[in-house]
Every structure is written in structure tokens, then in C-alpha cells.
Image 1 (cartoon, rainbow, N blue to C red):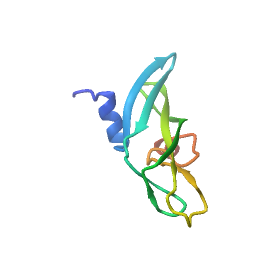
Image 2 (spheres, rainbow, N blue to C red):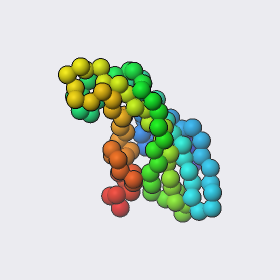
Image 3 (tube, one colour):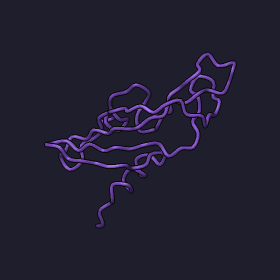
Image 4 (cartoon, helix red, strand yellow):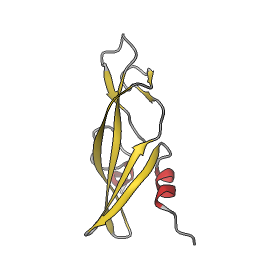
Length: 111
């Protein structure tokens, strides 16, 4: 059986993420990913935005890979909401891999 490359693995986990890099430190693998989406939907009003406010680093735990603890660091975008009727001027993009403000990936919590 052929081994998956890390970028292929990330695409299976969440097609909206791009693989940046990974490193193994002790008993932990740290995987860095970033959004490849051109737009994001405001979770407060449903408006679509392409205007980036800023980028921040988010870290969360995922299921082990080959007996290594797995920490994923994602570079998330904070976006401006274009809807003047929305109660929020900015919002953070979301991914199916991890829920808003969660510290563990969705798959990890199902175990």
C-alpha cells in the first residue's frame, strides 16, 4: 500500500486547508495548515466576504499519527462582514476539522 504525502492527507481531512509544513519534536508531530478558501461566510448573518481583516494562529489537538501526539496549527483569517445590518463587523472563518473555539479536532472528540 502506498503512503500518503502529508499534503494529500490534509486534503482528505479538510479540502479547505492547505498543508504548509510539519515537524516532529519528541513525541509530538506539529502540522501547520492554512485556508485555501477565497471567501468565508459570516456565521452571524450568513453574508459572504472576501475582505481579510487579519490572520491569527490557532492550535488544537488531533488524533495520534503513528503513536505521535498530533498538534495542528492553523492560520485562520479574520474577515470583515460586508453586511451593514450584521451585529458583528468581523468574524473568524471556520473549518469542518474543528469547531469554533474548540481545542480538539472533531474526530478526536468522537473517540
